[in-house]
Structures are given as structure tokens and as C-alpha cells.
Length: 221
Image (cartoon, rainbow, N blue to C red; front, side, top):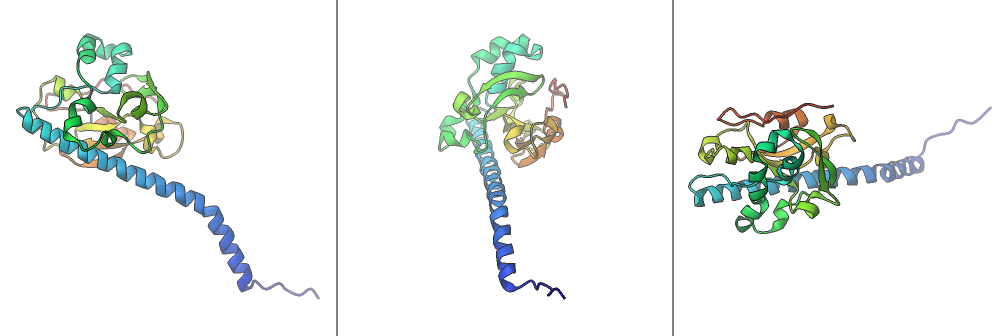
């Protein structure tokens, strides 16, 4: 008669060791992602504070500035063609706010891995954001510049938690899954000062203003 094998303490130790070896890389990846999202969110809070300081210095005005998406869309997006001259004359947001932040690293998302195309009002606008958006443009973030272009005072939007203000330049930075736009997630600073990690649909819904403006976004899968 065959003797039945008993699962012993040594076998349990070996099994646990194998599991730890398998799980450790995944846990490390998750930890780095979590820390990167947290640092990015803290960056956005500091940018929000800087915008408040700027408004205090400039009679309640929001920074009259643009972002990498504006500069790229000014060349390719018909929605921006009528203001292309303004877009290319206006300074970049990170340059305007530089006197109000401790370091230029405030504009660097740790999970900025670079990308080739923006996914804004027109999906597929060339971005030239390699090796990272920060390295190519000096910032990892885009800005709701239409608020400034419409001359909306900061006090008119400061209590609104549904209007985006500054956000990841690309949804791949904090994507859940790979490749598809539906997996994209964005860290977003809203005009009331709170920061949230949101889905693509939630990010798009933040393109609004008290004047009734809503960005010319066209959906894509």
C-alpha cells in the first residue's frame, strides 16, 4: 500500500517563499505606482496654491498662459485655428508660475513616461513628448487655458468642484490597463482646489466654465 504524503512545515515554508518571490515584483510595481500618483497629486495641490498666489498678485486674474496641448493643437486642431496667434504668443503656464513654486520639479509627474499624441479635443494630435513630456516641454501637465482666455476671474470658479484647471497631459500616466483610451486615468486639480484621480469620462466632463464654454472634445475609443 502506497504511503500517503503529508504536507509538512518545511513544505509550507517553501511554498510561502515561492509565493513571496512571485508577488514581490507586482507589489513593488503597485507601490511605485501608488507613490507616483500621490506625488503627482501633491504637485497639483502646489500648483493650485501657486495659481491662488498669482491671482492675489494680479487682481483675481487666472494665469494668461498655455500648455503643451495648446501649442500642439494650435497647429493641427481647427477648434484652435482662430486663436493660434494668441496661443503662440502666450507664455507657458509653468513659466508663469515658476516664481510661485519652490522647484521646477513641481511640474514633473513621476509617472510621466512620454507619449506621441495628445487626446484632447481632437484625438491624435502629434505631441512630440519624448522621452517624457517634462523633458520635452518643461511640464507634465496641461491647463484649462480657456478660463483665462475668457477673462474669468478666479473668484468666479474658486467654489466649483466640477471644473478642471490643471491635469495630467496624458491619461497613460496613471492608466489602469494598457493601451486603450478607456483605461486612461488622470490626476486633476479642480478650480475649488481639490485633486482627484478620475476616469477619462470624468476628466472630459470637467471641461466647462461659468460662461457656458465646453471644450470641443470629440469622443474616441
